Length: 114
Image (tube, rainbow, N blue to C red; front, side):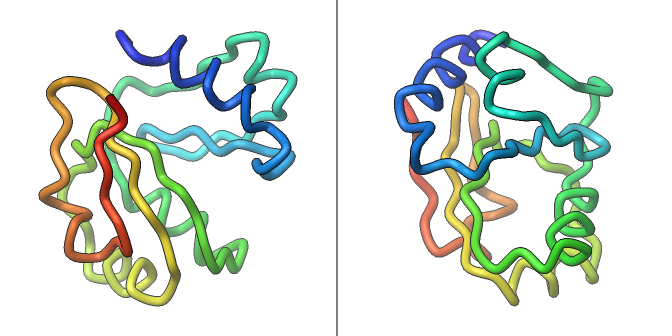
């Protein structure tokens, strides 16, 4: 919660480089427009399960992505791991208590967003 406002503001600054939809996740993926993001829309189920992200990637045939997370993504299923191995993605870690342990071996790059 402590980084959401700064993160949303930073995304507005680079909106020309961002897809017209942003995908938020907790235990499900919710797609919102950049204007909804600018308005501060948040969609969460207050849990974490990264398998929904891998399912979204596979369903929409996404080939590259930037995933911003605190790194607490839960245990990845075998299918989720395989899906993530098949794409190019980087991870931006947000928040002071963030961790890269789960995604570090799968991502091209893992960087802390201080």
